[in-house]
Image (cartoon, rainbow, N blue to C red; front, side):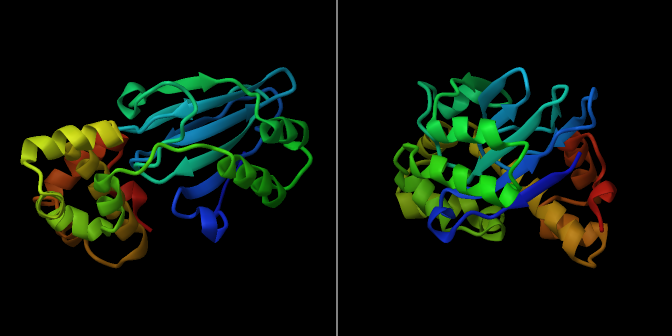
Length: 241
């Protein structure tokens, strides 16, 4: 079983982080997959000889152990944080660490279901892009628009204060609006962004673990180790290059 990601066309990059493909496992087997939190929502399509299904996976606050079904393949659309597809009557907070099963009635999905085992991922990508182009999305609030202009580093260093200043809100108003827009509290979202920022440094820099911890906004090495264990069940060392 292999996992592949591909970036969408430029016109969709403000909505979609990437498309992904998890191909069919060896016949008669299942394969557990660990999905790490990054603040996003995923639209997932599951295909097999018996049944085709689609799901909307909400933002996760800790590692999600996704167990694939026997003889099934998967395609997914990972949206940027704060991008909310209008597929069902739900709020982002309804599907935190959870998911909704959706009807598989879109023509593009039916096309995918017929060709998922025959077409290369690059061609399936065009079907996924067509799906996104035909989706409706919740309008971006001023909070989401402001946050989309922040780099991860800026958000970790001065995110709350900068948001308060740019939006003219009280701390309580910001926390209430943030949870409404993202489903999670601003504190939990910061934990997720800090975790992902540290992972990227672990993979792509030669800094020591202690320096990475401080650069990511952790108090010290021990704080980062404890947070990694809570979120991913792993220590930072497993993510280092």
